[in-house]
Length: 305
Image 1: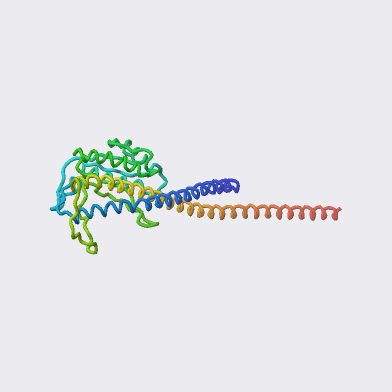
Image 2: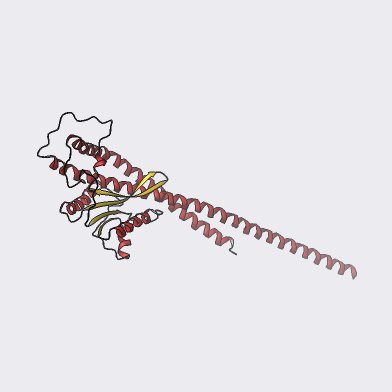
């Protein structure tokens, strides 16, 4: 059975760990708020880009562009596929990284010719350990998602797509649905589905045709790269916020477990301390009783003389 000194040492260790988890909770909360604020600042620009692309489709029917599926509908494309996998640089985030890896492995099983483009040290190390080839790893991006880094990633992917070295691009990332739930998504980035840019019934129809210079296709060729960069930036920030939210949940759970352990240790400490006090009182009482009997015995011996 542990003594009070050992229990006090364990309690101090748990309290020190609790200080670390509390600090990590606050840091994750601060990072998440800052990243969401930066995303909210840039979102209107990319929403405007999407609106301009929709305006092109409202103005001109049967637009031909390599970035979109043919107007007749979905067709099965055969050829190499690129997959951008967004993981974290660190652990201690619950099942955040494992869920992304699981989606990536499913993509590899469905499309063995998939080329992996990995964001995050966790994903890079996982695929290296399992001898899964990586086409390119983007360092220092997961912990600091910026528009510049999103452009660098989109340039690499678009270069492969424009030169027909890949026919499809997928993005695997994590979206924070609410403060308690994250969901891992696998989205096809390119080619776009035309229905994603379809007009809503409440949007005004175009009565006068627009004139595009030099051509509709070249206008789209200039709009799409910026929109792809915005999409990737949004996925990076969503993943970053989900990571911080998962870490907050994990640290909060760790704090609750620490409180439970401390309560149990405190009960055990008080029980052992009370047992020690009881033992000490018993020993003192027994000693006093023994001394009393010795005195009485001596008194009888004196009286007998």
